[in-house]
Image 1 (cartoon, rainbow, N blue to C red):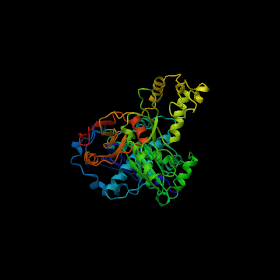
Image 2: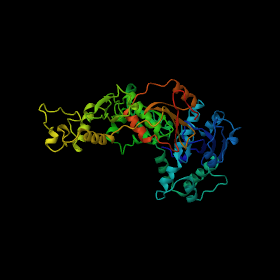
Image 3: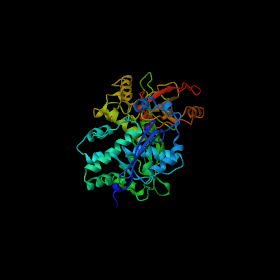
Image 4: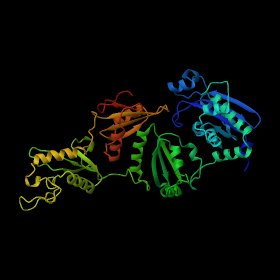
Length: 480
């Protein structure tokens, strides 16, 4: 196999509006073309056709005003493609730059593929004892100096060009050849899978879907880094038996990126229930979802009643305790609680009273009931203790007047997701106010789901990435 060092290289750096290759856009391209002897530089600002976030402007110095009159990517695409094709593509954290360019070329109706070398990986390979491998650290360690500003595309492309030229001059040819070959090798993939698909998977939050023959859903998962997680399924040296079986069956990979973790969790829970992939055991449909309803009364004779989600809207009930996927699970749980807390099985309705009046239940006979069945413990006292025990299982009350919109943003991206939620039911996710207005006007029927309830009670908290907007009713949408 010919050495990579004998091939022409192109050193690339991009500035972008964010870190998500599918949602964000390029604002500047800088490249250095090198044939092993001479180097040619080229750069251009790019109009991203969207606003540049303030923190990106502070980082790169590129503002909306600077790119207002710059060409859009589609205009630059034919000339840029000619400069890139047929060359080894080199970048620092190369999958970022390569992924952005692949997506931009695809939008322009062009196909771009190349052998890729990442100088982060190259630095780690050649300097294994060093801790830092960002471009500043690489530059300082190797005495790389350029006159331009850091975090501008051409400046950074010049630095990685200098790095490889220096390594070629200082390192033995065989060592550098082996390092370049090792870091540019494609991972081992299932035989039925197109290897080019990995280049398009973003380094972002989202959900990935594996399909087999006849488009049979095999597995659905979520991650905060889709590319890294998908690749981990194919790491032969660490592959577990389950992942080996999945890998052998995959013929297609699909994915949906999200703005953040909440969106990925909601989407994963919904898709698993809709598609029922063969290798997913968690987050399956819970059609027999049930809970205990307990409404104390004046004489203490109230008993827990098992009610089902198919009959009640669990999100709007205030007297439900525990969530179970079967009657058996619900009954066993209540029995264990009664036993541990010396509650009476008869008073709770879990066992029948003896036909002989005044006969204590079996639990009282073995010291596991305080006698509510025979009047030794007043029923009102027993009822109060039962309420205290069940209180730990009480379903959380919906803390808003009606529907809410949850705007989820990502500091590394200009994109956002808007989740419409009502009484713990996820009604849908959209990406614009116009789509939100349409969803509010025509919402789907709310369906209470155990997994969605659990993840919302855990993750539905206002913060830097989650803005919660109370809509106040079906026609009360506020501006986001």
